[in-house]
Length: 259
Ligand SMILES: [Zn+2]
Image (cartoon, rainbow, N blue to C red; front, side, top):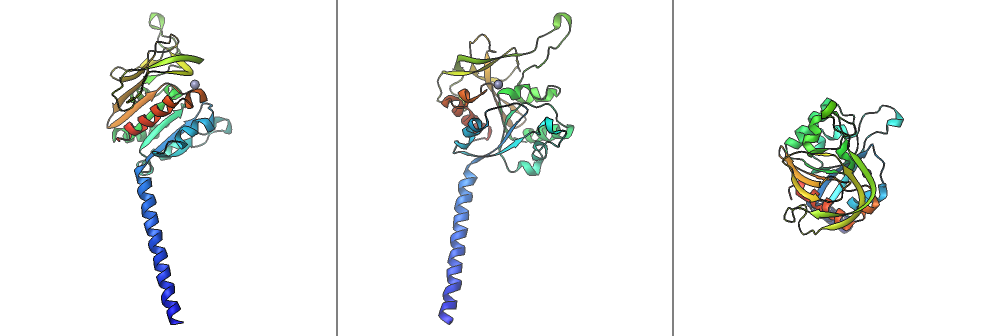
């Protein structure tokens, strides 16, 4: 009985050591990855094809959160608790692919504080039209898609416009910037936005001469200590499956994460 009893604890000990070693290795691998909070909701999109961009990115892990479906009645927004400082320790970069209006004063304050402290932000496509009534949001992402006309009389400015199914050339305005590094001008089949606002002081990364589009369609900026990138592209799978689009998102995530 004695030898067997001696062997048994040793076996357990070895198993425990192996488990600890394995856990250390996996957490080291996970620690290398950029942790993304991916926000969707308020606008339809081709879900599997969109999420594939993030699933295929070996440099990141991501958690996805969606605003509540308004058809199901008023519900708390699951994004808002994730903007609290404690919850925000679990991710490095927020990627916005939502188009959403309701936001509490508290959630606004939490988001502003996170960004001022340096959380990265990548803003994609229709999120340019989010939070129309919250002026600070346009300052955060560096632009605004106007859903309604604004101003009065001769100062009246029309709402922004969109056009689906356009084939156009995207010009890399700054091939030295980390977000566009190594990239060349490319063609894409995507939706264009026209008549949207781009805030002064942003660093233009992508431009186009397509007449239905605003000229600057991608930019980088800072907000507090946060690095922010906006990319207009990304209506559906024709953009999602374009390797240049995937590369832009990957490089934007990396840069905004401070890597
Ligand atoms: Zn779209």
